[in-house]
Length: 86
Picture 1 (cartoon, rainbow, N blue to C red):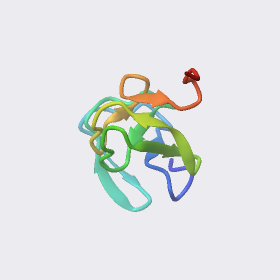
Picture 2 (cartoon, one colour; picture 1 turned 60 degrees about the vertical axis):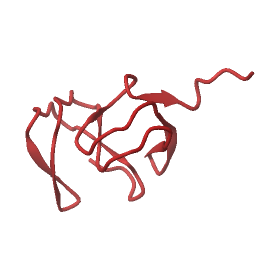
Picture 3 (cartoon, helix red, strand yellow; picture 1 turned 90 degrees about the vertical axis):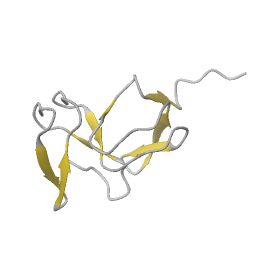
Picture 4 (cartoon, rainbow, N blue to C red; picture 1 turned 30 degrees about the vertical axis):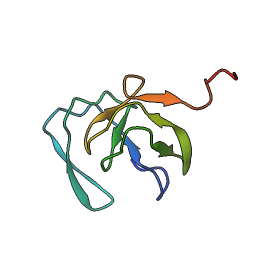
């Protein structure tokens, strides 16, 4: 499920298998990893350092390059909200 038209990610409504092809907003997407239920996956490539949008707003920043169909979670994004002030 894509929550907002500007989102870079969608949320799995059920467990999804690696290699599974799904449709999001009428576009076919092949998953590159297993996606647990309620977890995010990338709808398109996201470059390292770029914001990651969900709910139509930036929820974090990509730690590394993320390919379309990759699992998006704490291993490859860092929250903007959890950063300490310097």
